[in-house]
Length: 485
Image (cartoon, rainbow, N blue to C red; front, side, top):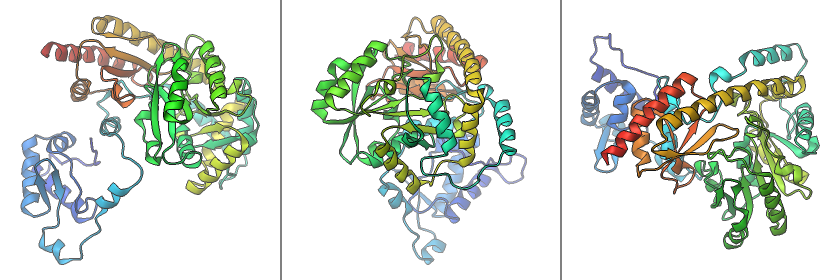
C-alpha cells in the first residue's frame, strides 16, 4: 500500500474529495506522477486516506474531466497528456519506459504490499524478520557512541575492504566459531544482501545456475535473477538440504555454486545437523562446487549452539561466508561481512568501491566497539532469553488455536516457524483478510512458488501481547475461510 505522508484535513471548510483531488493534481503537475504513471486503485486510495470509496471516485472523476487521468479496462487508471496546458508544452520524457527498461527486477507484488504495510502503526507484524524495537539495545548503542565521541576517528572514507580495526576484531570473533582467517580475507559490506549483490556482479555471469535450498529466502529477492542468474531449488528434510540428490541437480543444471542457510534457516527455521554438514562439505569438494554460507542467524540460538559453520571445515577455499549484525544487534547498523579467498575478496571489494565507496565509517566503528568491548556477547545472552520466551509463547498459542488445522516444527533458534495449513485454503485470501484486520503475514509462496499452503510466522518482532492477539485473530480468520469453502 502507498503512503504519501499526507491526510485530508477533516476540520477544513474545503470538501474532502476536493482536497484529495487537489493533492493528486499537485503530484501530476509537479512531475511526481509523470505521463503514463499508473495511479493506485480506488480501494488503495480509500484505505490510505481513510475515506469511503465514493469520495475517491468523485475526486478521480474530476481529474478525468480535467484530462489529467484516464482509465482503461484491465489497464488501471493512468496519467495522460490531454490538458491544453500540457499539450502546449513539449512532451515530457516517458519515465515509465525507463522504469520498465531497468535491468533490476521489481519486488514481487506481495512483498511490495508487505513493505508498505510494515510502516502502518496499527499493524501486528507476524511476518517481520527482525528484532522487536523493545529488544534493540538502545542504551548500549548510546554508550558506544558516547565512547566513540571521545576517541579520535576518521570521518572520511575507509579502505576498500573496510575498517582494519573492525576486521581485526572479526578475526577474533570468528576464531571462536572455528573460522581461522585474516583481515585481508574479510570484506565489510552493508548487510549480507549487498554481499549477494556483489557476488552476482563479480563472480557469476548471466545464464549461470545457482543451486539452493527449497524453500529459500533467496527466492524472495531478485538480486541474482536481475543479473540473469537462474535459481534451482533442492528439497530439504528435517536435517537440512538433501545431499543425496545434489549431484543430480549439479549435473542437470550445471550449478555454478550453492547458496545455503544452514543455521536456523529462513523461512523454515531448520538447523542443519552435524552429519549433514559433513556430507555437504564432502560432496561439494567432490563436485568442485563452491558454497555461499549465509550464517546471519547463527548467534540467535535458543536451546543450544549450532554446529560449527561450514566455513570452519573449509580447507580448500570452497566457502564464501556471510555474517551480519543486522539480525542480532540492529538492522539500522547495516554492517555485514564476507570471508573468502583473498582474490575473491579483492574482486568484491573493487566492485563495492565502484558502487558505494565503502560502508558507513561510523557504523563500522560502532560494530568494532560492540565486538571489542564484550557488549556483543552480553547482549546475545539477553536476546536468546527473550527469543526463547517469545518462541515458547507462540508455540503454546499455535498448539491452542491451530492444532486442528495446521502443522509445524519447533525451531531451536532464529526467528521463524514454518506453518503448514492442512485443509485446502487460499493463502492469498488469508493474507488479504488478515491485512484488512491489521495482521501482516509472509505467505509461503514468496520462498517457494509451490509452498501454497504455508505461512512464515516470526516471533521476533511483535510484542508478546501482539503475538497473542494476532495469532488468536489469525486462527479465527483461517477457520472462517476454511468453513466458507
